[in-house]
Length: 349
Image 1: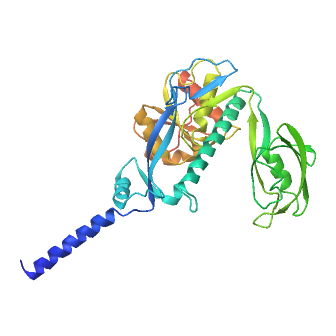
Image 2: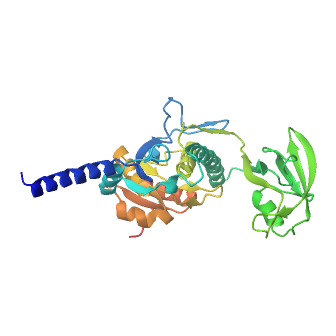
Image 3: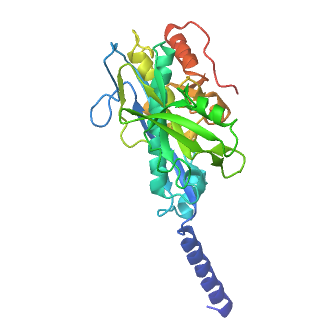
C-alpha cells in the first residue's frame, strides 16, 4: 500500500470513528412521542372507574371518550444522543424539541413533575366545575391561599389553605375580585383580610409593598379559586400530569350525569384545557396525540380551536377533526354526531 493510500485509509477511519462518537454524544433536545390514551368512561390501571360520582344519580354510558398523552425521551440527567435526535427528526410520529421546552432552565426534573401534577389536579377541579356549570348545577366558589412568599408582609401571618372570605369588609368569592381590588391599591396602603383557618375566623391587616416591577401593591400571597361541589366527583388517572385532559374529563362527567350515551357508542378522543366557565384552550403535542388516538381506534378527535391549523397538517387518515371552542360546543357537536342532525364545526384547512 502506498503512503498516500495508507494516509487516506487512516483519515477515513478517524472520520468514521469521530462520526460514531459524535452521534452518541448527548444533546439538549427531547423526543416527544405518542403516549397512552385512556377512556374517561372506563377504568384506570387498578380497575377503578376513572371518573366516579357519588351522591348523585348517574346513567349508563358506552363508547369511548379518550384523553390522549405525549411521552418523551431525554431531559436533564438522561439526554438523548445525536443519533436518536436525527432518527426522531425523520420519524413522522416524533417531534424533537429543545430541552427547555419541557424543562425550563433552573428547574429540576422533580420540579417539572411536581408542576405537572399540580396542573393535573387544577385541571380536574376546573373540569368538574365546567361540567356542573354546563348542566346548570350550582357550585360554591371560595378563595384560598395557595402559597406565601418569604420575607413579604403575609409571611408568618397567613398560611397555605387559609380561606379568604372578605377584603376590607367586603365579601369575596373569587380570586378575580381580590386581584381587581388590589390592582387599584397604592403601595404602602393596607389590606384588611378576613379569613378562616381550622374552622375559626381571623382578621389580618397587612401593609402592602411593591412587587418586583415596583409598580403594583402586593402582600406576598398566591391565591387560588377552590370549588365546593354538591356531591363527590373523583378522577383517578395515576401518575399522568398536565392540564390537557380537562375537556375530556368534563365530557365524561356530563355523560354520566345525563341520560343516554353522549358518544352514541362511537370511539371519540380529544384534548384541550378547560376553564371553570367551560372555555377550551390549546395544548402541546397535538400531532403525537392525534396519532395516539388513531392507533387506539378513535375516528373522531375533538381539537381546540387554536390547535386546528397544526392539526389539519398532521391529521392521520381516518380521523375526523371536530373543532372545540367550549364545553357547550363540544357537547352540541357530539349530540349532532349521534343524531345525524345539526352542524358540526370542523378545523379549517
